[in-house]
Length: 495
Image 1 (cartoon, rainbow, N blue to C red):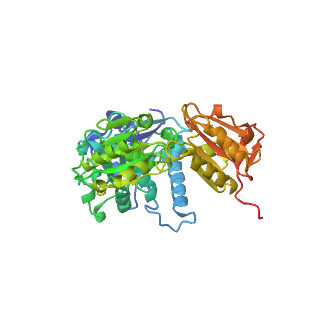
Image 2 (tube, rainbow, N blue to C red; image 1 turned 90 degrees about the vertical axis):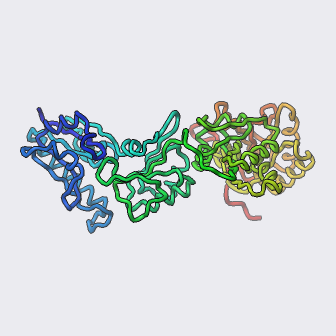
């Protein structure tokens, strides 16, 4: 065999889970390399021990540090970089001498493995082959005996070394997850699971397929009992038995102005965890279908009835997500739900409101920064309040020189409000005041234009449009690439 570098995956620990190819490569190699801590013991070598012969040249690659405490002038990272460079040079010397080198790796060589540091330094110089191995993720799922992911579920694999708030956000947003590298990170990971509302689902697997293997509910594991070779698992939710609840809850969520790109991690988690989704059918269609989850769509004009239906479901122990567009607290479903929830028969039903990206914020971002200073948000719909009130508020906001975000400007049955609003605003604003017309921002029909207030055409406005009307300080500039941007300075001129 000519000189060649192999990264050999050995599986999660049980030697019988090594692949046939891994055994073949070890038998043919002249040099067997493996990483170890300073005590000299190597888990990788112990897995492959029965296949290592007396005539094999063994290269023990001993880590200089195993924690981030070191007196190396470059710190932990500097010490490790120096070690990897030195280890790669030792392997390169064997390859240059015509020897075949097999670097042993627990699990899979390119999955959180030490081998990858050799691979990146040597693969461009030498013929290289990677032998995949069974990962600890697959081993943990097998030992738990429960599906890890099904259908369109998303599996997220996280290192426990991430910051706690990042872990919490990602655990809340995903369907299934595995958290690696526990040990000292376990208390933080446990808090993150609790913060994501998923501690009861979490399972714990220690040393899967090795001696001392243990599985348990993660909530029952003592913090001082967790070794590095353990993982936290959030298995598939499909078919899982929901916990018995005397009372459920209602979570009002905002999907943002468009699709999945606008969802917050917290909202994703609430949508995934819900037993029932309740909402206007157009908004429900933005949410992926999940097996076992009930969807209750309705017309956009029955907000109170929809809220009452959701609260009744929660009283029966269901976890309900009421789906709204944009932010649920801005001209949307949160008010309707809270209004009904204030009735005596619903006061014991928990209700939470989760924020979403508003239509005004999305439109402003597309146009530049027109909401960079004080602004007012007004709905032009006179379905729930008289036009006289709207007109009075428009005059007051315009006289105060506030930027205006105008929601619900027009529809098939309301065609004159935009024209009236333009007339009122021109009493206080210059004709060339920038106006952003933003339609279907984030959607397939997105169209964002900047026009003068005097040129605002009501025929171009419908219910999917948001208008942003500048103040006296708002500026519109065409940049070198031809794109026109709008911003309102944060500094207001002194009188």
